[in-house]
Amino acid sequence: MMHGLGRLNPSSRTLILVDNDDRHAISEYLEERGLATVVANDVDHAIRLAPDVTVALLDVSRPEVQDLAHGFRRYRPELALVTLTEERDARLATRMLDLDVEDHFARPFDLELLAWRLSAVFTASLGLKTGGTFDLRFDESSRTVYHAGRSTRLTPSEFRLVTTLARKPGHVFKRHDVIRRVWGSDSENGERAVDALVSRTRRHLHQGVGLDPDVIRTVRGVGYQLERRRKPRNGAVG
Image (cartoon, helix red, strand yellow):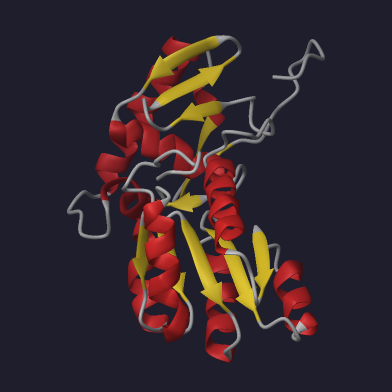
């Protein structure tokens, strides 16, 4: 029974790295409610799984997992983070919130609330609620982008590219990061494939919803970024 959450795309998974006693129970509960998950056994395993997930649920009671959260925030800024601590550890909870995690829970917590919060974090990470980047809206189920009263349906790779960039407007994504997010960590596609995909996506967004191709900006020698909302010369907000 879905309890109103709605099933998300199975390729958009939540990484779970929590204590052994909890991880599988949490995973089973989330799966029953339409949230695809993958369970990590340790920090090294979580790092290997991270390129193929959208949200990470981390029990930061141990120092090595705290370090992992900091590493994810620095090197994988597009990855949404939700953290867990013991109820008595208010100082650690504050440290995680200062890290600008998307959400935080202290034990004991309600699994149903956790499922709803993770669903909301995932939705927000795709920009479904955000107005900060040209008022773009995304519908993952149909791979549709909405802007200024218009809509266009993208190919799977085009959609993954745009939603990857839109999760962190203004952040520069390196080409190899784009490859992992769009085609997976085992992909044999190279930088030329990324450049060709960006070119097609720019053209498709311009023709479909009227976005300026320069919205996806090339950072020479590094990669690509989605510009933040700009104000045109006439004073209207784009």
